[in-house]
Figure (cartoon, rainbow, N blue to C red):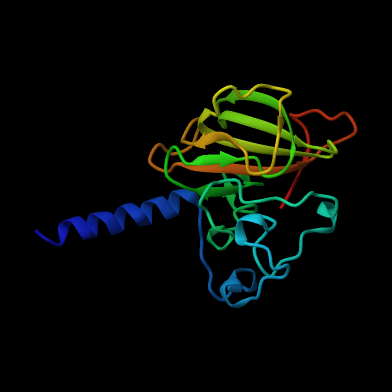
Length: 196
């Protein structure tokens, strides 16, 4: 019977990985990040949220520098789920697994464009960067940071919410669904082109 708990834990971990859509492919060049040197010398939390070894796409050249938007999560822990299938469509975001209640951080300076609740995203935040060219989408939050309001200016690294499982997130897989959207000329928070 001593083996029962370790086996149950391994099965739970396998289920979490499958539900999160995380696939680790050691042979894939995009994931050979552990051996690659840091391109800019900054600590992992201050580097762009793109898998190591990949260059940000040309469409994202004017994207301000982003930090990993979940406290305590190292850049090397990120897995690219942008193209992963989700119910017949592309995911177009990254899921960052973390314990429920872990602080969610503003990935760059900007303002809170919208605090919103939806069935798929649950409790969400749309943040515009300072140039209002980009919208950052934070979803499946447990709650907002106390006193957070629409229109409020936020600074990179400031706590804006907490990791949870609201919306259609599996209840046993707390994570932040994080997306970067290029805004159109209308600057509508609900519209934008997702960029990996």
